[in-house]
Length: 446
Image 1 (cartoon, rainbow, N blue to C red):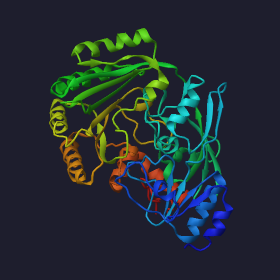
Image 2 (cartoon, helix red, strand yellow):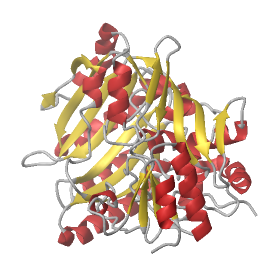
Image 3 (cartoon, rainbow, N blue to C red):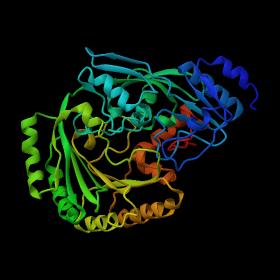
Image 4 (spheres, helix red, strand yellow):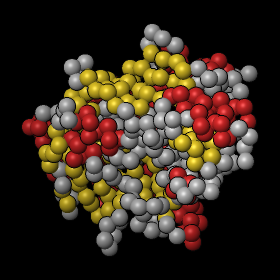
């Protein structure tokens, strides 16, 4: 038993969960079931004061500390062995100002919850389409969305944050207040403190034209070759994502689109894509943005372990396409594939004054495999690694930080690119002894 634990628990508005408590079995698990770590205690915080007390308790006792909001980190960074988990998920307060187009959230809010609130006012924050992802972890590392080509990444919409730092201060980070911390939190936030609230700029969106064009895998090479040229012509109102997904009897190539602009123009922009090579299924139609956000895409439902490797292609050459089709066709089971998002427009191609390091045009990719039975792990893992080795020579070397598992310092540096050295200097200022290190870690500059 940790000394002072009873006194610490009594000081909280939230609660402490220990390994012998009934709730522990559920609360110590994260989304990726390949991660199975057991912390000494979980602190379910009710507000920023609880977060502050948890940090102070952990520091005094030298406890490894993990921060969790939604628990969706592919690397399993929402939990640690033998240490303390600061669980933000009970923190759900939201304030919305539709006139100023602003929303302030506590950092236990999930993407699906925030979408429901903001769509009541026909507005949105750029978020992904998995409703159970924590908004905080997703947005502080960038935050990709179908809205990104037009409105930017989620981190681009952050106006201000409340942050509890490693030395026990509660700070406001904004353009005119602790501006260096504000810079760092937007793209590398997990390294610099615990965000307890985030204020976002909202963007008007109500309806979209969206859906999928689906092709048998034998047509994938022709479709990908066409997409490589088509993608360079599209306007910022169009979001494009391609994946090899399961289909009864055969793998399939799924080309998904989300059009954000005027409907008639959208049909004109999409017409060449829809007619180039007839799909066996075309589900593109007008729909409410909230309905589009609820569709999800390449993540199976239920409890799965997973492994993934990500990166970036400047373009899809014919040689690369051949390698993709060959390896995708050899997937060990249906819950395995490759997904590619095409990034374009000013938010993806122009330098911005924040720490986000994956701002570039071209195709982001991730190879993924999900499994539920332990005997499937080895073949799933090996297929991902073999596929990644085969396509790595075609990759640019860049990687989106949220696509990383625990892959070492060089991959973290690749994720932050030329922002890394400034981040390391700021890490020395705000977390000199690397207290916040259960993350894609930036080592404090010496």
